[in-house]
Length: 490
Image (tube, rainbow, N blue to C red; front, side):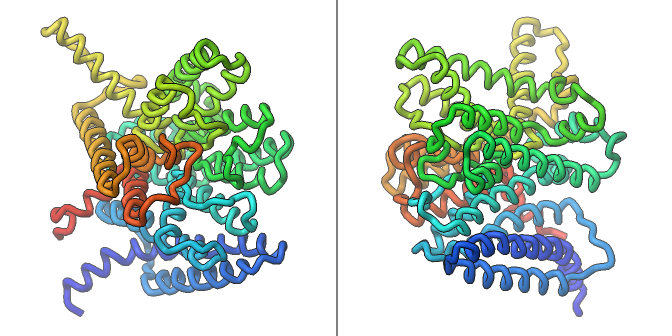
């Protein structure tokens, strides 16, 4: 075998081996919706069973053909694994949508699967209230699987790939708790248990508050990953119980906090969450936004205080955590509300959680940099260190965050430009692009707004948004680096 071929095989084999294992896990998970359909006598159980067998077979063949005594990944392989996983796994996950009794084409199926696994929550499906349980459970399960994948990526991969200043998260969160859990594998296992525990607690809470067992299961599977898929066309607005709205708000916040800090709290650091600068910034943003919106709804729109506070809290938290649940069409609350929700679409919650967006960690770095810049304008000879969360912010991290933010805004602008080429108005194009890159779900306007649906969009527009969702979930540079000729040099 030529030396070049051997080197290339050694480079790709570990990556494909891990993707094969992930594909097997995805295929096995199809057994759950298959059983759900079998119980109610829906014929789609055959689709899920066939898709499961095929997916497991392909994953198993990949694993067997790439076996190695020891699997270790270089930096380049880490980039490749991260990007390929998020392009290939949604493709496999789309198969049941294609062949189920839904009348969905390939592009619609890919859009739905990508939206699910990136926990975006945008949907092209209508008539959810009357759909069979298997396909509803599959959508929810994909968001839950995507959520744990996002957490692992944010904690174990992105900080070491040094994407967009995420190395600061490694310094601020992960390394601080090395004594409690010295190995990354132990950390991932602990985080998975926390994620599972919160999901079970959420589901039981929903059920106790009045949801049916099936609704509670599905909404728990989509709340913790801050995904936003629902079993009803009216989303969370289907449930008129105030207690359910408050529980949803609470558990969306739970999914938006750094999961390493949950582990630290359980390991004995009781104030780990409240002492974290990123968490405090996130909670201040939520509190300020809820207060502003509540005053607006009471004073201008004529809402009662309790209703205004509840609706403000739920929908602000839903957008800033990039969940995308909606209890009402908040685009009808006036210009102030629409503008506020548009800004919150970009911010996101905490790094190390399941949320999308720019992340509060980067927002904090930018605010600290802005503060230092203003001080230097006033005192040119002064020395003002950049700090966030008790950590010094190096020039490298500052530059990385600024470049990421520029790339993020450019990606939104290009996606919006592409959507406008299909004839969509400015608001629809811009907010659909923003919500895709930020992995939020609903945008603004009659088509993609909280009361709308992405089904009317053209196939090309759906493909644009599918790519935008993956780019946003992978923090953009994880994909862009693969397009550089430098990456492929030996």
